Amino acid sequence: MTVSATRPSPNKRAGNGTAPRIDADEIGLDALVGHAGYAVRRFQIWIFQDFIKTLGDVDIRPTQYSVLTVIGANPGLSQMVVAKRLGIERARLVHLLDSLEQRKLVKRIKSKSDRRSHALHLTGQGETALAKFQRLAAEHERHVEEKIGKANRERLLQILAGFT
Amino acid sequence: MTVSATRPSPNKRAGNGTAPRIDADEIGLDALVGHAGYAVRRFQIWIFQDFIKTLGDVDIRPTQYSVLTVIGANPGLSQMVVAKRLGIERARLVHLLDSLEQRKLVKRIKSKSDRRSHALHLTGQGETALAKFQRLAAEHERHVEEKIGKANRERLLQILAGFT
DNA sequence: TATTGTTATACTCTATAACTATA
DNA sequence: TATAGTTATAGAGTATAACAATA
Image (cartoon, rainbow over the protein chains, first blue to last red):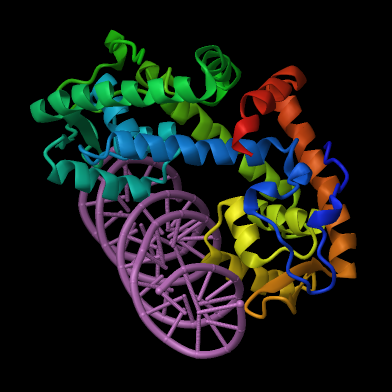
């Protein structure tokens, strides 16, 4: 790691127990520069907050969106498969689906070949709604472009392609 | 957004309620490709898990590491300033510091100039420990390099520099 | 009046374990 | 025995509100 050495400018040093005159954005954060995890985490928080805000009117959060999108593109999947693919605990997916089913966006159909499992489908309403969510998600994606630049967003997606 | 159209290959389609023969890694996830947030979130989970595992022996998690690092590089900061700088709720920082103080890594010293606030310092033990944590964090950072490539890690840090 | 640290509460998310009905 | 879905619980993390001491 390339944690740079501490570089406290004189006016930023505090003596023993002396409160420093200092604002949050003036802190030497050199020590965290060079840590990929820190930068990625801060960016992820920003991006989720923008997503939640942009899709605020339709009350859809990132995980709900990913579940709807996967079901929409692959109708008939079981809960196990969706959970595994999205990296969600199957116990948690139960609640996510309960809520989406209550909102009439998704339906669970009993499988005939394996009566333990459910085949997941969007409702008609769900398909219409998803189209709208995707338009809003596209708007969110444009916010990302505005924030880091179109080329950088493309590069980012390339670098992280293996994690989807 | 560039959500590609649904492309269900015949063998992946399930009829009404018919359980499909399909593994999680075979699902058409085209619909989520092109969403920066999804890729960033999956990467962030991977990177945190590797960090937690790599620093597992010393029982230090990413947030604890960032707090120790900022205090180490800027001794004397108040809790408000640290919380604001790291984007942590000040209520949560209280508990984080309680735990770090119990482990004798950090000490809260009453400020003389503003008796409401505490000046935060590492203990001697804390300084020694942090040096070790930073060596382990460097090891973690090498894992990131191995995962996405040295050049890509550098590019990522450049793209996200504004979020630190 | 406003701010710092603290306590408390609620909600989301993660991680497990155990139960049921099927296989 | 093992698996799919479910239920329940505990621990992080986040978001708020309110309080005491101090400014």
